[in-house]
Image (cartoon, rainbow, N blue to C red; front, side, top):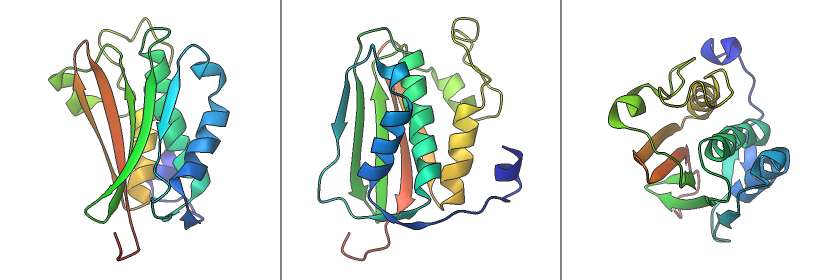
Length: 165
């Protein structure tokens, strides 16, 4: 995190498909996802994006890990992507407890742990802060939409280089 904060990481940015990054992330978090059906909705028509695939796979890993931690066993997790306004939006959605408006303002802060979850779920509160720093190092952004008792959708946006999108 210190290297990310200091903008002192070297990104090996190359053109990759988001499918490649998602596949790497799914492989890495397979044990955490064993009690959750995962549905991947990535159209074949998505453009490649300039990214450091290992770092972006880590972002997706954090989002998948959180979706599994904060959702009840057996609830589905969805991964999707689409192009909008020259950006590739990749989302991880769950059917978990959701996040209230106050917590949504804090959720990407370092060491922040959800008030209702901090004793129930293991973690340091660094995963989303790390994900945010990685996405921003790629010139992108990250956000969350959520409704309590309905679940959350974490979306991150990366610039699309091709003018066709």
